[in-house]
Amino acid sequence: MAAMAGLLRKELARRTGCNSETIRYYERIGLLDAPPRAANGYRIYDERHLRQLRFIMRARALGFTLEEIRELLSLRERGRPCREVAAITRRHLETVRGKIRDLERIARRLADTLERCEAAQESGATAGCAILEALETPGTASGRTAAQEGENGAAS
Image (cartoon, rainbow, N blue to C red; front, side, top):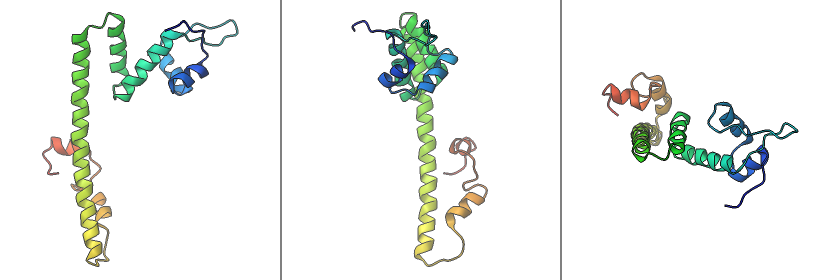
């Protein structure tokens, strides 16, 4: 890639689609290297910052946590030890799969509750609302996460 002149944060944000305040946050927590400052005090970003921010954004789009991204960036700087990167990715994939299972349980619970509500409406029932009752009744939609219910063997 051809050498580029320094960029102000606003231009870095425009080129990457990342919010300016998010860039500032990534710098503050040490995820994005702090850029040097020009004589006027403005931060001046370069190609390295652009690549680093794009890497961070791609990793975030895949759901990696900031700490996982920090680890990946560190490994990247040390020569891309694939085995360690794969281990992080494998753990992340298991987390994603767990979330999918949780969301599927939630979707089933919502669909069942909605089906009861619609059946009650079709039958002309006027008392109560199956959805509100499910939200109020312990053990049906008690505010617990699907993962908590699954851990305790509750039926979905």
